[in-house]
Image (cartoon, rainbow, N blue to C red):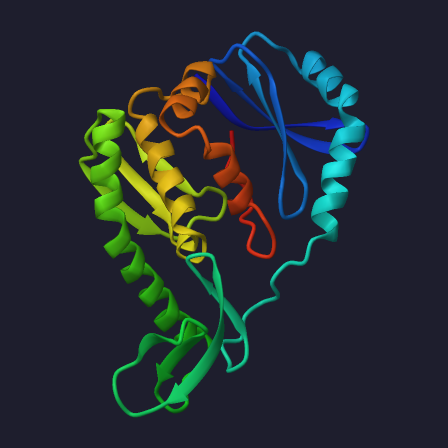
Amino acid sequence: MNTEGVEIRVGGLAVQVVRKDIKNLHLGVYPPNGRVRVAAPLRVNDEAVRMAVVTRLAWIKRQRAKFAGQNRQSAREFISGESHYFLGRRYRLNVVVQYGPAHVAIRNNRTIDLFVREGSDTAQRERVLLAWYRQQLKELIPPLIQKWEAIVGVKVAEWGVKRMKTKWGACNIKVRRIWLNLELAKKPVQCLESIIAHEMVHLLERHHNDRFTALMDGFMPQWRHHRAEMNRAPLGHETWSY
């Protein structure tokens, strides 16, 4: 059982409560806006959740203040001089107007050349760059899945890449399919690998419970470091929820 979308108020603070088949209550504050989320055991009622939040209000406020003080990347216009990221590195975008097919190339480990047709608008340029990100991920993912199939002892039947607003990855256990967020192309490859391992461990344990955490600790002891890296400014995604 897993109930999503229940919201309670604690002293004016909105708290998302998700009930799961877990032993202990987990409280998290997530970038970029300091969203507060509690994963609670099925037996724990709303009043007990409120008390848990109240006891950690000072910590919650510190976390939200930290996120508020971080620099976030402004909306991209896809013009020359902008900063864009690929596999954890920052690049300067150089837009090249030409008559051939639109494409992307990395130059000197410092510049992303974006080749577009004359008159291309922001949306068109974004689509070209996102298509390139998708292709890069599709080349990186297969060997990583093969590696972690051997480590975790499971088989992935199907995988795909798509844009997701609130998750770095997802797993359909019934059909053994995993999805990976397109935004992972901007993060270090270790983060991509961590999410692949994370979703594959779900084929052994459906829930984010103590057994899941123990499995992750055994297979990839540094997974918490990678999670922190993924949520770090200026490219922190909304959440890798637990």
